[in-house]
Every structure is written in C-alpha cells, then in structure tokens.
Image 1 (cartoon, rainbow, N blue to C red):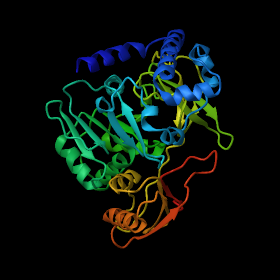
Image 2 (spheres, rainbow, N blue to C red):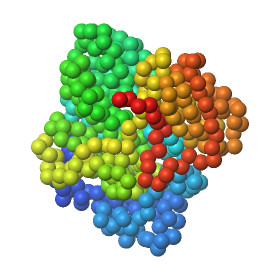
Image 3 (cartoon, rainbow, N blue to C red):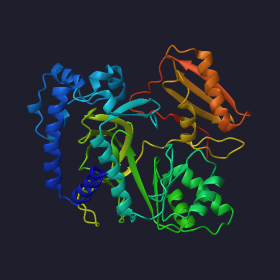
Image 4 (cartoon, rainbow, N blue to C red):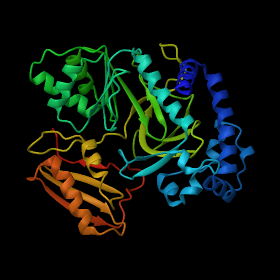
Amino acid sequence: MSSLIASFWSLKRTQWADRATLREMQDSRLRRLIQRAYDHVGYYRRRFDSIGLKPHHIRGVSDLDKIPVTTKAELQAAPLRERINDEYPLDTLTAERTSGSTGQPFTAYFDSHFINVRNALFLRVLHNAGYRPGQKLMLVTGERKTSRPWMRWYYSSIESPAEQLAEEFARYRPSVLYGCMTPLREMAACLESLHHTTHRPSVVISTAESLDAATRNLLERVFGAPVYDIYGLTEMGLVAWECPAHNGYHLSEDTTIVEFIPDPNRNSSRLVMTNLELDSMPLIRFQTGDLAVPLGDDRPCSCGRHSRRIARVDGRMVDCIRTSREPLVSPYRLTLALEGVNGLDRYQILQERVDELIVRIEETGSDKQTVENSVRSALQKITGPQARIEVRFEGSLQPPDGRKFRVVECRIDRT
C-alpha cells in the first residue's frame, strides 16, 4: 500500500510538468528501459542485434524510430521466457490475459512496481474528477472483483441486465459512478424510460468504448453529473483522460510514450506505445491496434497541464449486437462469455441480421466439434435459444493491412 501511495503522489506532481521536463523525464527513462531490455530480454536483444542497433544508439524519444514496431503476434510467436526479463522468476509476476477489442488473446506479465503505477494512474484520474477517499464508488466493469466495503467501493458486473444495474445504483447511491460505456448507457436509458427519480452522483466516468455525443448527453441528463471519459489498455495502464476543461484527452506522458503513426486509409493515426514503467515484460514501440486523432494543438490546456492531447480514439468502436430478447447486447458480455472456452484462440463475431451471429474461429488444432458446441452454448445463454449461431473455422483471421480487427462487428444498418 505504501508503494501505491508513493506512486500516486509522484504522478500527482508530474502531471503538471512542462514540456521540457516531460521530455527530459521520458528520455532518461527510455534510455534505462532500452538498456535493460537489451541486457535481460532475449526478444529485444535479438531484434536489436538483427539490425545492428545497440542501446547507446537510443538517446531519447527522437531516436525511437530506429526501433522496429512490435506487434502482439510477434511477441506471441516468441518463447515465453524470451519475452520476460530474465531477472524475474515467473512465479513472482502477475499474469493478465487480454482480448478486449482486438480479438487476439494476449497474456502480459507484470511486476509489482508496474501494478502499483497502473493503480496509481487510475487513482489520479479519480482524484482529478473529484473523487476523495471515503466517498462511495460504484464500478461497473468486466473485472470479477469482490466489493470492498472498507473502501466503500462497490463492484457491479457488465454482464448484469440494465434493470439490475439500475437497482444496484439506486440502492448503493454512489458519489462517483465509473464503468464501461455500454452498460452505463443501458442503465441510464432504463432509468429514463421508467421515469425513475434517480440518485445523482457527483461525477460519472466512462471507459472501454468511444464515447459519442449522444451517449454523453444521455448520461449527463439522467445522472445530472459531469461525464469524464478515459482511455486505457491493460498492458499500458491508463493512457489518456479528460480534465475538467473537456478539451481533448491528456496523454499520460509521464508513464507512456505515445506515437501517432499516420494511417493512409483513414483520417486518423495508429497508436504505437512504449511503456516506461513495465520492467518485467517490456513493451517497446508496441502496436496497440487502436486508432486515434491527435488534437493538433500543443499549447498548454486551460487546466494548466502541458501534456499532449488526443481529440478522440477512433479504433474502439466495438459494436453492440441485436437480439429479439434484448435490443442491445454489449460486446463485452460476449467476449467475457467466451473467455472460458478451452481451445478458443482468435475469433470474431459478426452480425448482419437480428438473432443471427457468425462466429469466425482461427483453427488451433483443438477438437472443432467440442469448441463449436461450447461457443454456441456460451453465446446462447446471452442471446437466447432462438438465435441462430453459425460457427466457421478458418485458417487465419488476419485483417487486411491498415484495418483494425474488431472482435464484435455489427453490420446491421442502424439508421
């Protein structure tokens, strides 16, 4: 706990650093990261040696383009111990599996320092939005965590129906409401349709999906509170967040270097990131698969912070599916339902008609019939038995270059 508090107070200070201080901080930490990755991580040592690159060639952020971009697929293809810093025994690390919006499961291994920093980044966002210790906090997430009464933190599941979330919200009466955007939107719509006189929190914080103007207006109208949107990744921590000025999303440049690589097929850029705090499994020039639009204004924000900002994240427009039983089903309910299916690696769920789903599965050598039965059973618990679920096994689900892979893609015209 003391390490977490120390990380929080450090981040609380560094968020106000000027551009020169931020760049000096990034350059110094990057040099250390590159040297340690070369000395202790086989994947990077071979990668650097193959192009004749040595740690002393990287003096700062301006030299980053000398390093090839790393993809999830490339990391996954390397033996596990080659990806991990050889100073860390595996049993001292925390393994976390991510699938999220990429549809390609990926297991990252985190040291205790990184976990403290990641938690401190979350606390910094809560604090900046107005949360203070002792206030009631309701978290609607996909994390299977037990509520913490002593902290007054109450966890709700994104798998719960909107009616249940609305009932839990009314019963718990939180000061701060935090959660994935889709379940928050569905909860708000439920409360509004029932003309429910709802408790009003002091702030609402949304995450996990791109927040559109209509949803922001709905949340502000129903909950009567300002809405703050944030963007993060499991393997990076919280990357960008809104301040009270609501003029773009501030990048967490004190922990992560974010590069914008122009995408020729879109009016947005690919996000490539280097985490400056993760020592156990370094992620250097890591291609996240997300797309974003930089704000294009390097002047300090009116809030007083000097960090760069993004205007919006374009590449996280995951889709809700439609069923006759529920008009909108969060894509995260589907991905959570499939997490427990053995033999299921990469997959994609497509919808072109109500109550019909196509599940594309990348072949892994597992028993196809068993995987198909498990997938159909898991999804029909959500969609209902009336839904037709077609399972297709394919050699590769690699998307065309320049396009983001969306694990749940609804193609029904919503106009």
